[in-house]
Image (tube, rainbow, N blue to C red):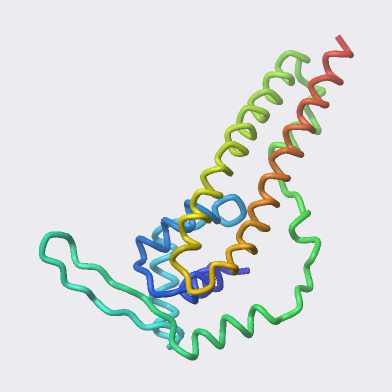
Length: 185
């Protein structure tokens, strides 16, 4: 998936500024898709040139001016076409490319205490990330009130469930790994 389809999907729920789109990514999508503000604005400009969306500059007296983006019919169709294309890489979600796991694989070259410290840092990070999933649920609850059909948020919750399960599995794995190393000592 590319960022453009995520943006089209969010704009499908209604017009938003680039700032609002960036906030939605940070609040509710960041556990499976990261986007920097600069990337978002670059994609918005490109999609506007393609005719997938249009923007309106809103002049504000007390605040900086803002640009509000909305989908065109062409953009809506592009999004729906993408949504209906069968996924050919179903296992992509399970594919792992991790410098951290490469380090774990070769951690036998380290003293056990250093390896356990490395794993403990991983555990702490995953615990924090799992806790941040409650913020994603809060964002989902907030954003579902701003769309025409709040029942669509059910799918947002399903995606968030994947994030929760992923972090919980990571924590379980690292605790087992640390226990294995402690048995060795």
